[in-house]
Image (cartoon, rainbow, N blue to C red):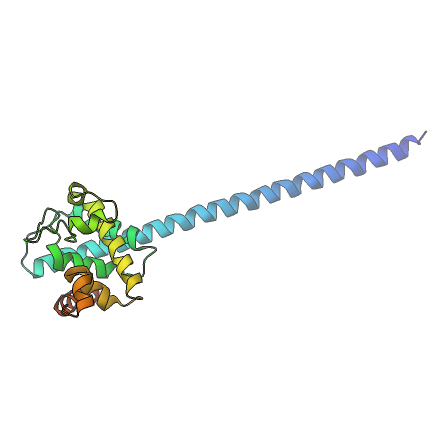
Length: 204
């Protein structure tokens, strides 16, 4: 049998160890909490930053529309367009501002626009083109679907023409067939590029 003094000594050592271990656990938990809090703060900063960029884009578009004396577009709608364009170009090689410049050239950002050739909506996509991506003609009148489908088509064209933005943009407007036959002209690309450069300048 162990002497009482040794038993008490072992007990004291054990309590010290438990106390130390507990403190370490608490400290570890505190660090975990700090990491979570920092992560939440970072996400909030990113969110605030994105919202600021979206607001700046909308203000730019409002100014651009006004400078061209075109029909005003509801601010809430413009904000939706900007957010959707950013969302669907996130995994794309196409700049979101380039899509907005195309949108301006195509429809003046009026979502119910229909061309004499039957192209529909904000980015004036043909029903036959949309159907090849599984999108119906009626769905093209929905702004979000119109934007998404048009960006999918632009991504397809960028892949087809090996990242050549000029050729992809011309093909979007004048057709892949005309590009293949050498009948396509660069006027559309030049117009979009001009809008893009002006919009970019207004954002700086």
